[in-house]
Image (tube, rainbow, N blue to C red; front, side, top):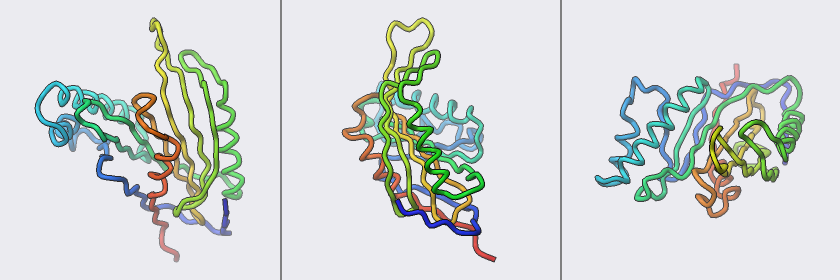
Length: 212
């Protein structure tokens, strides 16, 4: 990774991820698109039980993401096989202000936090596997983790295994980093989740505020 710290940093004023057509943005204001899930399901699949199942899943996802209440977060959903009636993955990305100091130090700290998840257990959550790596995309250097996480609700006989990747991108000269979290609907939703999600991160585009 190559960090190019600047004595003065600028805010990120816009960001986007130029994903393939099977990724769809999730509106986080239901007053604007109250039937977004049903409408999108109708666009990608014909009438039938799969469409109803997909629509219900998308509606539940939208409500859950809105409930987080983070105005700096944007979301997208991946539906490569709509005929299954399931979305394969959700992506949430957001800006986070960098602490005082260099971006390289912030990246090292974030990477240490990702590694610290190895073996972590809290009620209903157990990290079974954590693999971290570092790299660089057009938007800047990044640190990342691939996780397998066992999730168990009270009363469940068996845990559900979630596959997840987490990225933190540090655009040169920016006052914020970009965090991206991919959550797969099931293990096997991706052929190679670290590689495929890094390809999405490689399409990240950011815009910094203009200089005075």
